[in-house]
Length: 148
Image 1: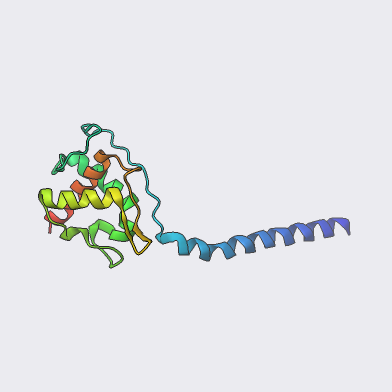
Image 2: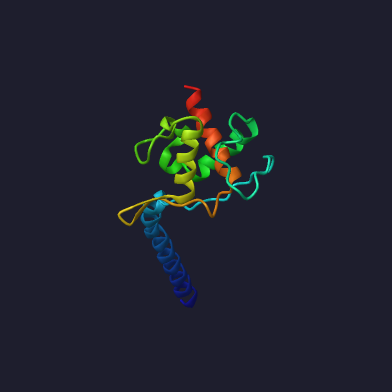
C-alpha cells in the first residue's frame, strides 16, 4: 500500500508541474513581441573606431550584407518584417530614403529608439549594437529594396 501511495503522490506532483508549465505558455506567447536587443558578431568587417561616421561605409559590401542579414533577423524582423517587408507592426524600411539622407535618419532611430507618449515603440540599440553592426544592418536593408 505504501508503494501505491508514493507512486500516486509522485504522479500527482508530476501532473501539477506539467499543468503549471502548460499554464505558463499563454504568458510566454504574449511576450513574443518584446524585443531584447541582441549583440552582433562583426568579425570580418573593417573596424570604424569610436566616432560615429555619417554615411554607411559598408554600402554594397557582401560581408557586411551577410552580417547585416543575421543582425536584422535577430533584432529587427520581429517588428519590421522578414526580408524587410513590414507586416504593418512597424514602418516598412524598404521605403527609407537612400544614401546619406536615409543613413542619418536610420542611425538616429536605431541608436536612440522611439518613445511616444511614454511608450517605447522601438528600444534604443546604442548600448547593444556597435556602429559596425548598425551599418551592416543598413547595408542589408538597402540591398533588400534595391533588388525590387
